[in-house]
Image (cartoon, rainbow, N blue to C red; front, side, top):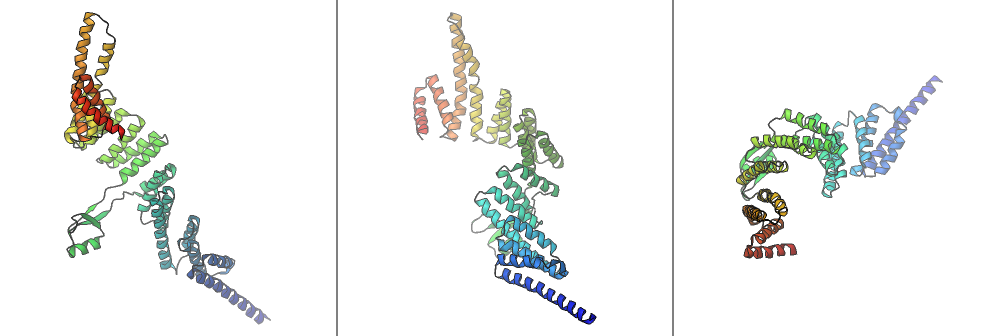
Length: 415
């Protein structure tokens, strides 16, 4: 009797093992035929046998479940999460297969991310890029893409979390790139090192070299700070900037980023102080000089503003806004004159004073003319400068110049 029971149990176990293998083989067959719904159904049946499976069968089950959920790229975001979770449970015999499948999943997510980005579906693109990183945490560039695209659609809370993760990972985005000049086009091309070396050897390219790309840390820190500003958390914004500057004190981009935060907060004194520091580091930067001119003008430091605008022009003779702003500073001097003129009476003394003020006003106009004329020379379609200069010629009685410029203004307004 005992012998019969043992035989019966052995037979039962053998049949159970056979059923497991049969279900898993059905799953394999369905996956090979891309019948993922059928594969999932067969896996559902196999799930009931999990408690009796040996480790090898369980590993196979989880590997096949990962494949079925991913469904060759057709699976949803939730399916991909499930697939990844299942693959984490599959260890041992399927190491290389799982690595291959994960890379396929990464490539699939990146492809979908790029397609969404090109369609300007930034929110979706960001999620695909993040998923690419979660699948393979070797390349933090994907996480950077996820954060940057989240900013595009003002998903600030999510972007902030991703940026903070990048900061904690020490991400800078700095990498070595290889380049050479194409003999045919004369243009420098960035290439893979092996490709670059091959082209140089074939003499289709010359002047090979290598360099490090610029760090993305200033951009990350700036975006983190600006997100804090948008959330009304100005203290954290400044804290983020100062921490970054303490780490990279000579990084002019960080100084400018902090200056921009102060500008958005309305801290003009601090904004100006940081611009001056940046100008000392980069004295040949016309834009910095111009911005200092704007800040000085807003603070009503007229002579200081003029000096910055003139320095801007010295560095960049075609910086049109510097000419326009200089003319505006000069013309602002007529306001107190007009006010005094309008307040005069009809006495002889008042008439004499009126004539003096009129002469001063005309001298102001004459001082502004060269700046406006230069602005129009740089940009003949600048309507604002043309109208202002036209009106000046009219007041000064320079009829021919007025008529000529009026034709230009009429033509610009017609277009």
